[in-house]
Image (tube, rainbow, N blue to C red; front, side):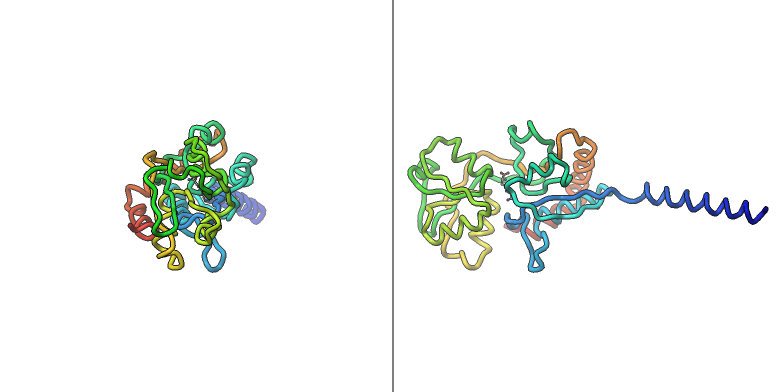
Length: 249
Ligand code: ARG
């Protein structure tokens, strides 16, 4: 009889532990990044996602008490996957634009850029107009391409899956210019040994763009958690450390 009661108590206790354990386990979110955008999201030697955005989202998760799993997902289609719930967060240097805000929700901004035009070393332009009639490369469906389209300047736009391939074509003389986020342009022009004396940042636009983490429309809870994490990462000085580690000057 006593043994029976004890056994029941033990079972009940076990159940309580299991349930508590479950509710204590941190929520895990899958994060998609197109790892072709150094120094923000790229692949390391072991083909794992690395870079400023990868460290940043991990720091945000730690600060806000959730877990993340990082995945490398091609830019073309990356937003479709967050809409259908294949992953929870896009951390891919996504500029917050009005157009995108109609379809997705964004965290608070975590980085600011402008567009930069890369030319072969020694060449120069004074304005975007000087690109008239030229062949210009950029990553497909990025704000760099949108800026050129909106400018109305008649030129030939070549859209690549990977901006690195556009820069290869520039160096190879197959296109005349590349347009991309200035921090990425700086990485290719100043940090890639192979390109040091081959390419130059010839022009930067004035319009500022802000990067935000992208989630499916309506996931307010997740946006709130991201914003809480971003705030803490800024306040704690972790952001400054990550900027120093990945971006420098
Ligand atoms: N900031 C630009 C945009 O939002 C380019 C982002 C590209 N990101 C990448 N990981 N390939 O359109």
